[in-house]
Image (cartoon, rainbow, N blue to C red; front, side):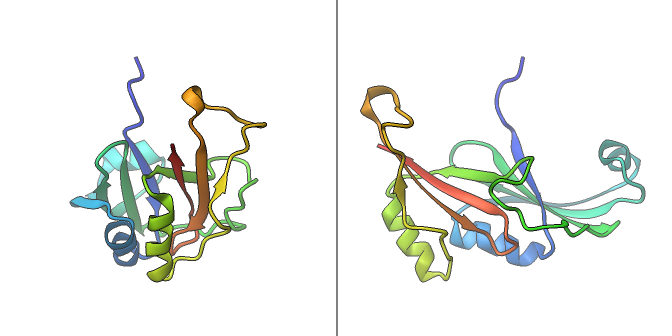
Length: 152
């Protein structure tokens, strides 16, 4: 019955800046910009008087990324930073090719990574066919935790 993940939604403070990051820095394709309001969205999200702007960003494969900026009621600041061990949904991972080149490109654009690209030790996790996973964490301009991962 469940087919796939359709989209990931990020509530953002700065829709223009976040759109630029996901489009221009990460290479997502902007496919739609809409405004939402009315009883239907109030009921879906459980808030009253919702007004918001939404940007749809697509990659060649996988779920769409939707950025939403609430105009009414305004967004709520989290009580603490999105730490890797905070309960709940923590990060969004992008499967990539040539992780080293991509990291170097983003570093040139000013993106700060939490570490160098690391390989998952075979002593802890193995993948079919001897494939190795390499990964690195970083944050978008609003401190959402992101991951690049490469399998080869």
